[in-house]
Length: 121
Image (spheres, rainbow, N blue to C red):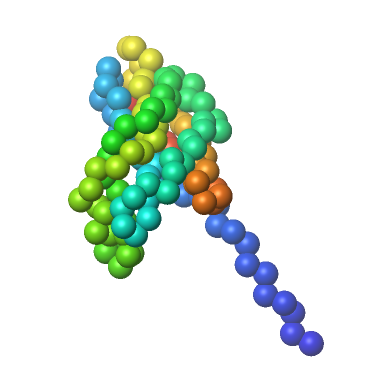
């Protein structure tokens, strides 16, 4: 009798970010729109693992989606819509490596984890 195939979820990849000391970098720009570009709702962003040498601020802003070309919502990539933005700011005077883990919960109920290895130069 053949064994059942078990598919394990992939561990989230680590995103690499570089930021100049004394400045900030956007980690996530969470946007969720309908095919007509109207807002479904703002995804909730949470810090799962805080950085050791900086801070993460989350604020509502306006931004452009970045849906792939084959997504029906790709036409919305030219429309500014409300979004939640997570931004990393290093501690003043810090130069080196930092790490942040984030979670995004969509208005439709999906959950995504994201990890960021940050180099401050």
